Image 1 (cartoon, rainbow, N blue to C red):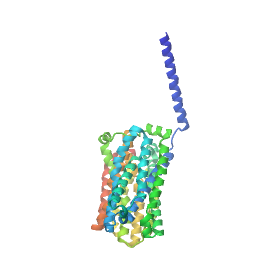
Image 2 (cartoon, rainbow, N blue to C red; image 1 turned 90 degrees about the horizontal axis):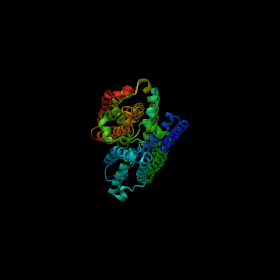
Image 3 (cartoon, rainbow, N blue to C red; image 1 turned 60 degrees about the vertical axis):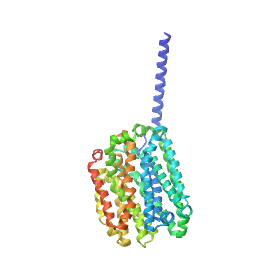
Image 4 (cartoon, helix red, strand yellow; image 1 turned 45 degrees about the vertical axis):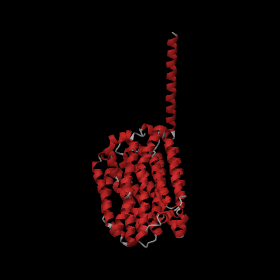
Length: 450
């Protein structure tokens, strides 16, 4: 009898406890019943804008500073090519960072992962600001620059927070193109700030002062922006509402081997689908800056201002891409832009050799087209994967897209143009467009989800 009563009381206690827990959950959810896509978008834009600013600060320094400061024993062309080799190290390291930090997240949680990424990114970026030059440290300065660049790549891979995937999954069906483009606005925003900062320094400092200490200032700014942005993202994704939403959408890391075996085809297609956009990305940002520095008498600071204006047009194109994609579909939008990029590739030699007017046309037209195309690159990354694999798959697809499409683009484009002529840059860009069209023709997942 006592046993029966004890059992009954235990059941009653369990039921009351379960009921209370359910009420707690409902109460928590009633306080924050839904996280609006616009709120998620804020976190995406903050994170991506900070990453792109850091990205462009290093890219511009690779052209304007590093050849003279770290490779003074070489001619300017060779120094710039060596600088671009180190530039590519971050893209090579990024997938390894993603894989390593996915493991950290599975064991210790999302907050620990982002905090560790913040720590590495802060050390890498601040380290560049204080890095001794070749004059003071010799060859070891190049080694340290390379290690810090690898650290940036690892940290950027580790800082993947899943917010772009969450945004894509929570966007209304007829607004997916619009919400997909929001995170891509970080690219023109980052370029405009970095370009304007370098243009100001070049215009107001002597060459000696700029190469002595002026170039370090953008890295101080990049460090500060990255710290603030990563803390903002950390605070966002660690809230109960976002944690619940990420869990509901199954946005958790999966083992890379398992995902590759199951989703290898989607991984490859996703990486190649936006290849035209990623190839064009560096052919209107980093490569023209190096070409002007080497082969033109034009003021570099004035050229940077033209590129900043181009980045503003890119932002307009990114916004327009959301409207167009919601009407035509992301696959059609990306395919159409790949065709336009292929057409633009034919005019690279004529425009770049066409004096200031031709160069300005190439920059402004190229940035505008880049905005239309790059605005939907995130859609190609996130749409292919089932929910279980979306978190890891989207991160690795983005890493591979950058690596294949953009990581070596400045090195290849400058090397080809310097030794064989600008016509070979046209072929390089054309090959990227062809790969995108081939991948999109196989990418039925995008067609279904549109």
